[in-house]
Image (tube, rainbow, N blue to C red; front, side, top):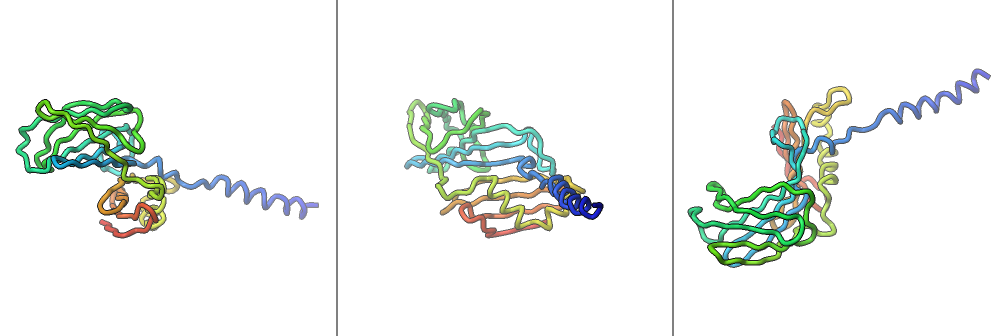
Amino acid sequence: MKKTALFLLVPLLSLAVLTGCKGTDYEKHLSDVRSDLFAAETEDFSLTLSCITRETPYAADGVACNTLKLIEIAVKPSKSTDGSKSYRIELSGEPAVSGELSYRTVKGDYFLSQGVSAFPEGSVTVRLSDDGETTEITATSVKTEKTLSPEEALNFAVDAERELIDRMTAGSTFEGEFTVRLMRRSRNYYFVGITGKKENAALLIDAETGEVLARRVR
């Protein structure tokens, strides 16, 4: 009878152990995410609109804090400028975003960052005013049906950097934060940054396959 009871108890204990060993939710450690990128171009300027979820205030210190949704818009004139122009922008529909763009000397573009409650999807109509003239264009998302989500890209990065992640883990607590940014060159990529208290890593990941294309650790 005792043997039978012991036989039944072993699998129950094993089940309890497995149930208690839940994996770390690395998504809770995301501090800066660019989940979508919209682009448009005319003869006079190029425009990018980024959908960002970022901790505020932002600090690359290995600790992820509360985040806010932001729309960031950059307008780069085709010809070099001294920043004397004045641009005002307005999105049609939701989210409601409008305002004056500030000139960024280092990048040579005009920039606006504004908090939102939701992000646009697919495409967005943008009205850009310059010295009384208004141009209306449609900015289209660079994402396709094959594009991984930021969370999927994060999973590929964690799998690729398992040894580093383990070194950043004390007991069952991960002591680090992640940056995941959708990028567009001739194709889509994800930049994934892993920031710990002593070590950092940066990965360039194919946004469709999750393959790690480049890696830097310091």
